[in-house]
Image (cartoon, rainbow, N blue to C red; front, side):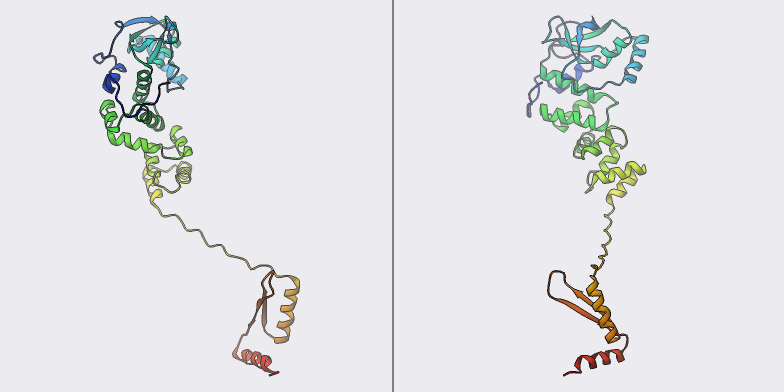
Length: 294
């Protein structure tokens, strides 16, 4: 694996590497040989290829096209540094796999002299150019190009033909929690949905709501901007009184002819006694009782 290199430009530059992934463009870089056909068994996939999954349905569809029209776009390869007399695929592994499904024995190739760093960079660029990447895969590709090779958003924008805002918006998606990113990867959420959730205080909870309710991007934006609902105050139930306290309340109420409540603080000696009166006459009677022995 190529070592991380900060803030540098390759000797040939990103534009030259772009040309390597588009053989119909004017060829750049050092070509060891002219374009030719090679047997598929002499080609081996790049072990550091960032893309690990190839859809069987996608390969079968491409294989059908290859049976009818052949492999139109040549593969970019380099002499295999690990195994003599073979070549390592730099760009075009999907075409190589589909050609084997179609039982095509030779494929057109362009052989380049590339180091490990350039091979990895081209592999990432080729993956970004594919239309079937989900937003997280595309964002991860941009992040790799910036972190590993020191490319700026402006440089990527110019070389890849993507607007700078498009690149910046996708990179922001990598700030989302992993569970929200998973919704993007499986298609449950679009990039528009995800951008609306980025500034939310709890994007995971909102994302779950959006998916479960099937909300549109506009509805998601409104949901993300809505102030959080205040939790209802929890009504505290008075602590249960023991039998002795209830009996004492009963005796006092009977003697006074008024409702008496005894609130004793658990674990303490103190508390309070409350007497409720229904009229001023009852209040006068209560005062008389309390002052009778004075």
